[in-house]
Image 1 (cartoon, chains in turn brown, orange):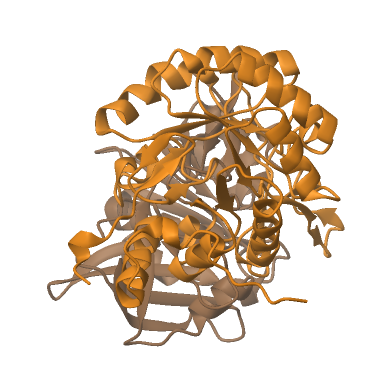
Image 2: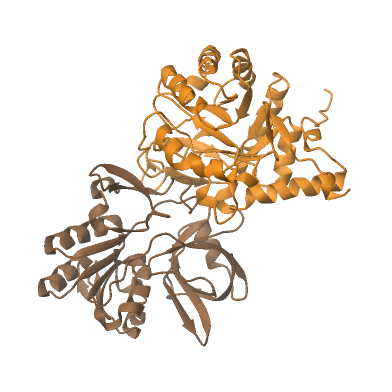
Length: 258
Length: 309
């Protein structure tokens, strides 16, 4: 399906991070779902981007994608301008499950903060966002969480802004003080593994958003799998594109996720 | 020419297919995954995900790497086993009237024969012997790279199978024609080629191969000229019907592949970017036939006029 680009601009000066908005009348993405972007010349495969947000503004349904330029596919996407169309397959997959009346912790690392934005829109002040960045120069989008009423607590690896350390420190503190029903996390795998462990320690439900190289996006090719614990207690591969990208953290075999 | 006079049907190894376009094993699941785009009965046939006697987990991720004009995969025959396929997937395919090619692989020759017996008891139209999977340690390509083994295995499977047998050849051999002749001597009813070429990518930041199994199967537009050449060589070496596979992305590629000698063609990797590719290719072949006054699609097959050298 083709959608018209409304804007596609750098998120922050000097970083390879972009913020694209498309007019998407029938694109009703749930938080955490994926959009599979057709890219230009020189790419064989589509690129899966998580949906950052989906909202309506003056009667127009808008889908928002924040992404990092990592290779030629995302580079091509970043070069598209307002008025052009993009070919998107989606929304795909199984997104974050929201729970009415729950208090949520959104845990994001780096570009993993983007799929949490839809949750911030839904939970508002009933969520706190714990956002980890490499350094002060990489901080972005925190004000958007605040705009939805979600308190954003920032931590940086090198302490150049906010607290120094990893986002797990903030999570441990938040859960110690209590009152949270569910954790949503997206970021590098080691960070998600650590978050999953903390969630288990405090007995709080935790949903994680997984990422793998993806081909078909519809569950046919079995390319984007991650190792999970199946209902029968055995290990088995599940597809990130249709069974995920969001899984219960307890399902993931973290030792296998490298 | 009126469209109603167009005959897209092909008799392939005794089975009438409504058109010459199939989808390739491993790229189309069992058809339901693409239900939002097309239904498998719109195709000439669907070659379902390769299956084994027992369920297989497949390989550790990462299983996918992009390359210039192509991709590598290292799925490793993840499948729920032939019995689960028959129970859970085949009834749906039967109901919609799809022509099913059962792609099968084994660790041993015995496995191939057993699975052939199981498939013989079903409504499946063809058995496709996958002797060319590059992504498993046992079976697969180990069978498909030696002519004597291909002949013996084909003969054995034929003795246990009531369905037409398609032998799927590996391109990772010195002489593709020797392999095709071996399949013919073994009694194969048809040949499909090519399976993927063995390839590799390395992440220069980590010095690690991108695929966890280090190497994987290379497919996509980049392999098309190799596939075309091999189909042409095999067409000139054996008289068996040919299912031409390898990097076909559009109707022009499909027509080229048929001109080189393919009776029918398979679409695989192209579907990942364009899920509608098989249907667009069927339409494109129709348009080509109308434009060129061709009534029967079978007239395209082997119509290449090679240069005399």
